[in-house]
Length: 148
Image (cartoon, rainbow, N blue to C red; front, side):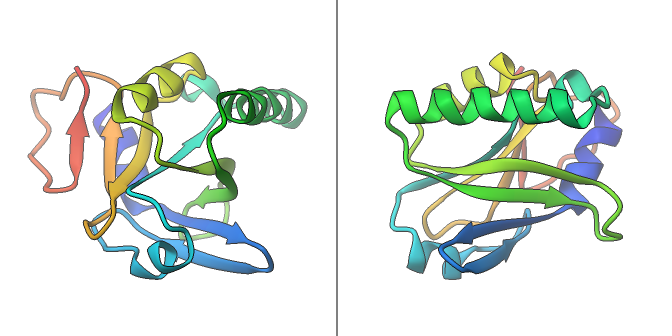
């Protein structure tokens, strides 16, 4: 889990609103996004590659459609988003969800087999929330939380 947390920490995230895109990263504020998307809480969640196992494109797209349907059914405003490494070799599609309660974020992440989600509160730096216990050898990081 520690290695996976590092992957999340070094990833770049992008949200599309209309015809514009905004980048965000863990540990930094996202004021530009907050200026466009008025919410108190923000959550990036993906349904791709559940349990951190590489899934095929068709399976990932099916999972993404189920996630989007779940968000629509629950009435949460959400925008197309993307996570990727800084080399452009690995990409995962997902959604930036507005004002989803923290407990619901954990439930949603686990339902779709995600090891972590990226979230923040208005005016605060972007954070990572891993869906497991903190590994014993993990050195504390100011923007990483462990749900276990």
